Length: 122
Length: 118
Image 1 (cartoon, helix red, strand yellow):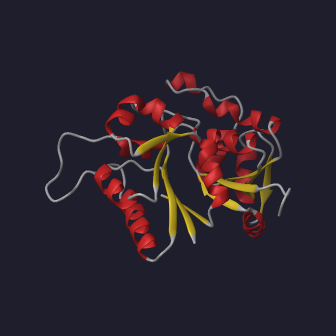
Image 2: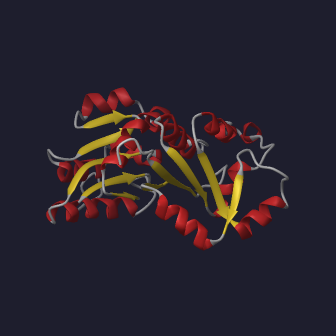
């Protein structure tokens, strides 16, 4: 295992405007990526809404933390996944997302999660 | 087995912290190692000690201090705590609680066999 990259899975469940902080999950991902870990993001439920472009949290009195997701790719390998049904629904809302979001079946997600050395639910 | 417990729920907003506490007690009683409990997000509110206590119930912080003993670190996320509470006050009144960054959390994750998030 010496020299092998550690692969971290992070399950992101929270909708973009459900709290004041707006970037707790992003901070987790940034910390992992900055430590040289390979990051696999699994967006579930309303979590994927964080990646819709053109959001203006400031108009709701919230910090703009969710706009930071694109910066992850500058730190290292990042893969973002969402269930294919939800990916279809999201594509009806936007042509592209702030982070490349890949559709996956339930089996594919389970396989990707199993490949992670550690998984944390954000 | 080495187990890391991460608490994101506040002591008053959910029953999950109680479940986390019971898990840590049971794990240690069974001989498993719990090197740390990491409080992040609203979980950092566990660092606060209120003035009033409901009858028959110890303050959440006291429960955590008792279960941690000398072999489990109680760490609060410095970023989340900085946004929510006065971290200096916490450090002065409860030395057993320590602020720790997310990189510390990830180091613990890499070192443990299992991570359970509440």
